[in-house]
Image (tube, rainbow, N blue to C red):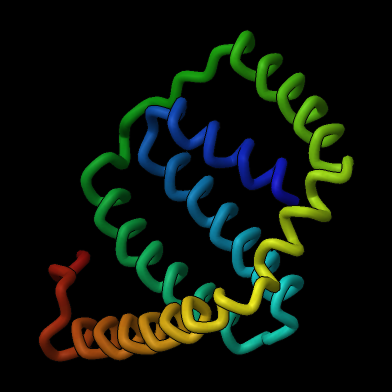
Length: 144
């Protein structure tokens, strides 16, 4: 899973179309939320993270779709071959013992304050997003 997340982030830096960037960001958000669920065995934290990011991505998608709707996408085949090679290489690397050490690092006791702080920050972000996206005073212009 770590290799897939690394590959999605690498693809994000090399993409040039805003809709593809949004799709890659959505995929990496789903992978991060799922890895949080697997690490901490707490579903509400990953669910709130997923909802917050996907809500922001929906707003971003509406803006991008209205601004760059007719922009053509360019995709090179050399880059596709590089990504496939990198996916197999990272898959072999992640399946080794390094992933076990990666997961043990997050269960270290001093990280409990960091986890609590991130949960409070996520709750605060959720409240701010709800306050900003009121229907009567919404940040989006009318889409006709």
